[in-house]
Image (cartoon, rainbow, N blue to C red):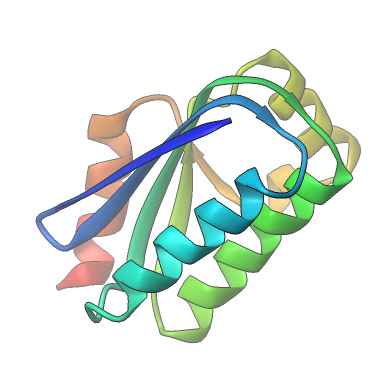
Length: 116
């Protein structure tokens, strides 16, 4: 899995590619997010459109990230999950917990009011 991240208008955008299945990739993801949390960010959008496969460890990482942002008074949005991640979110009923956006522009709109 590869992770790229950028901060735009106070929102951390994380793009994931490959399989979200565990260490060491998930460690890198968590470390990257923790580094940005030091910048006083509390809004995040995670693009899952290029994730082919996700397992329980990957789901756990997403829940961990959501908890980090919500405990800071912020929010995290998932952008356009591919088929397998979308099915896993539905099976685990986490699609009721996560906010899912169809694209980056919608995610930005959903997060901006909370950032103000």
